[in-house]
Image (cartoon, rainbow, N blue to C red; front, side, top):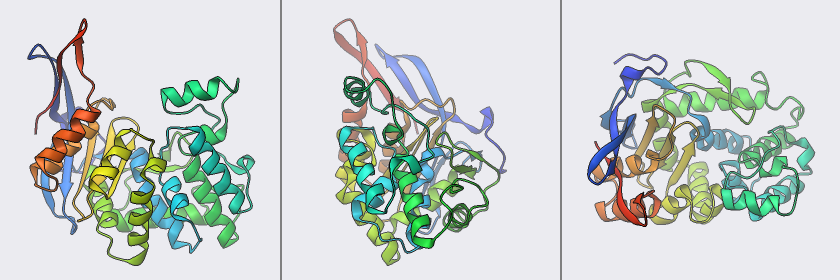
Length: 323
């Protein structure tokens, strides 16, 4: 299959929504599962199609931050990798992260925003009439970027520019981990450079991180598993996954998720229409399909994450994965 920007023909049906055992909706997507060496174990759709990986790139961006030699705590590593729900605990932790490195929230160049989680948004709205940069789900990543720049003596004002030394290091790191040069670049919703990868390349990159082949990757794995709440939020999909199977789990906007097991098997999923409803369920089923996790673990996690289909006061359906 050829490498090209995403096209409708690249996807296949990977999940269906059932109402009274009748298909109501279909999710078309791309799935790639690779082992610790990057060999493909499962492919559905065209895994060579190039997508914007969005926040699924964060584990790779964090590797570049750590490679600068900046001294981060385990919590700070997890926050750098996070798409957090914006809870008060997250906002306070990012503020403390910045303060420990001689920075304040004014240095952040992510947008002013409200928390990602609905409960967290309501909690913050009850206390403040306006959003702030700390609540933006990528504020931890930006704090990590800034801490690395402080450590290296790099310019803080231009830390999001593609020509900045940090962003050049991130590009090189993504290329190394994914085993391919990004096909094109743009800007993510948080303002950081965003680089297009194939779905298979994204899976390879996450597998390499998850395999923990060097001390930096081992430290990263320890940080993420010990502070899974910081990566997403209590009871949320990525946190549930990490707390259950270890490794790394990371959502990305527009229908993306990656999961890497502690043994280095990784899955990347892209739902073509950008829906998040099926992403984690499809990823878990793909890992179970290749025996990277047990079917029991897959079923338990899927049950906790699934959105049921209601008929009045009864549950009459739900999502079914097709691989």
